[in-house]
Image (cartoon, rainbow, N blue to C red; front, side):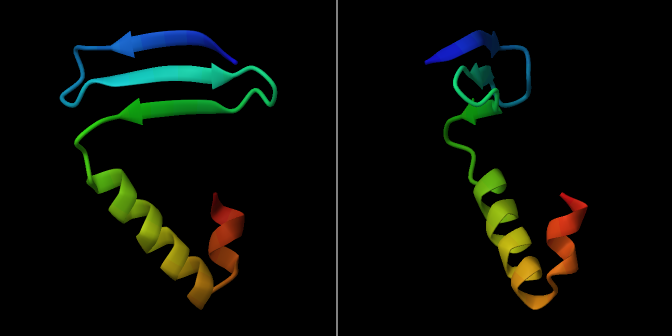
Length: 57
């Protein structure tokens, strides 16, 4: 299911990097860190206001 699973324990907030085998999508997993969730919500709001924001990603 996942390949190239690598824990990054030296980061300020430890994360696990991995790649989804079927699509090749790279992911980062972290726990107890709300900032990425808030950033995602903020970007969604921006893209709802101005569709050009989606092109920047």
